[in-house]
Length: 181
Image (cartoon, rainbow, N blue to C red):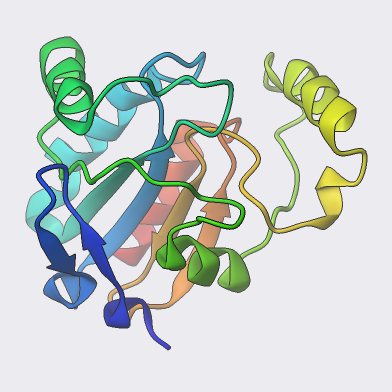
């Protein structure tokens, strides 16, 4: 399977083939509107404005699996992202990224790039680690998505080349995106 074999639902329940993004650099993110990482939307929108004309697409998949931090309907999420952050990149239908009902695209992404740890210098890392250890002491050993705003970087040929945890500095994300463009 290739990333281009997957179809997803946009926020208005229209089926979208990822083949439409062939030849683009993709940054795929699971998001939440009420999370400590939600301000990353500002950085994502800045990236999109800076690099979209060069071939970057950001694909946003809201997910309510982590602390119920993405409540609301798809339309409420789109409205929030527009009014609060001026988001112009595509927002897709709310999905699950782990477990029995996980979106097949995320099964594929996780099979390509596993969890490699949080940034030890980020102030939220100890809180995340503590929460995750209470639920699953072996969380470090699985490829599951650990929290909101995990990002996967896909090159123009459809290869998943990097996974960024939410604690990864957005300057590093931009550096890697820029290298692929």
